[in-house]
Amino acid sequence: MLLGMDNVKLRKAVVPGDQLILTAETVRVRKRTAQCRCMAMVGEIVAAEADIMFMLVDDDKI
Image (cartoon, rainbow, N blue to C red; front, side):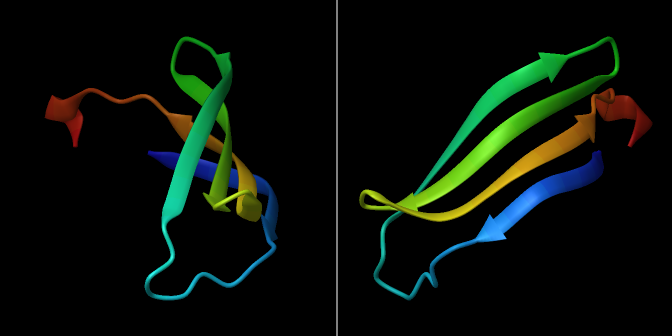
């Protein structure tokens, strides 16, 4: 479950035909929450980046 997004930066427009590569690095994991640093790249150029916080939930609770 998404809790929030910080430091969101949209740096380059992505158009049809671009190959978008998404990466996520785990920054912190706690008992029920986690934070990742995410980046979207087109070739060697950063198209977008953000720090995403989310809550870990069981499948049966959704």
